[in-house]
Length: 102
Image (cartoon, rainbow, N blue to C red; front, top):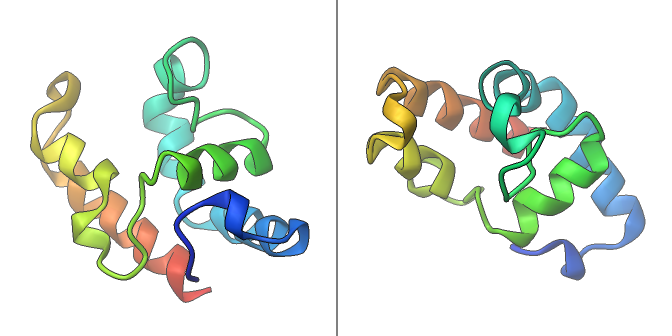
């Protein structure tokens, strides 16, 4: 998957990204981030609507498909975001890699 912004994608391509997101990174984000980023905290990337979540992730450039370890998601965890476990960074990186490979 390539592209940095949902504005660069056709509706069909965005739907394909959202479909892949549902089975790769979304379960982790839903389980661990939706309490804030699915309810009241921007960016709202852990919402139930996979298409809206995908648009947000791409617009905020939270993933780097070329180099997942450099993704903003990964860096936020490594910087100590909300005191979350550091090993979450690897789980997120794995999810991004799987998403990118679909």
